[in-house]
Length: 132
Image (cartoon, rainbow, N blue to C red; front, side, top):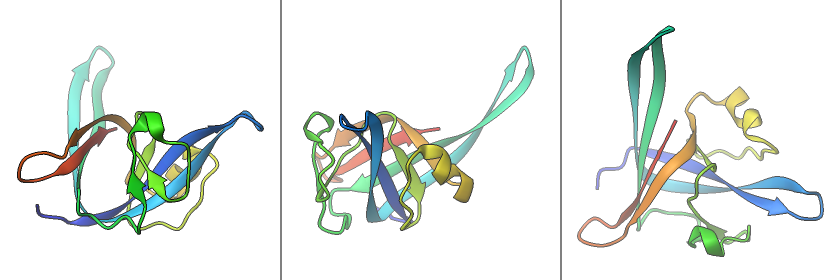
């Protein structure tokens, strides 16, 4: 699989003590990143939005963190996951965030995960992630 970028995944987990969401980041090196600008005509005029597609090869470097399914993710520092409403930013970022708006202030290529699939079968084992 051709790769053209590094990404940072911001996984959300709930802290029952503070009753707030926490975001833990994982840098993944060697992924395929694509952005497509979609335009649609509405009753209010033209609407434009970026549609993001990322493919993460099973062999991508996650710095030793291990992928776990969303129902098993508990926010441990040595794991990462893909789930709706988590965020992905292009680049190997060292920025910690308290909320997604913090990330969008600093970086333009950020999206919220709206879909993902585990395609770790066949010849090109990977995870496919989509979002806006």
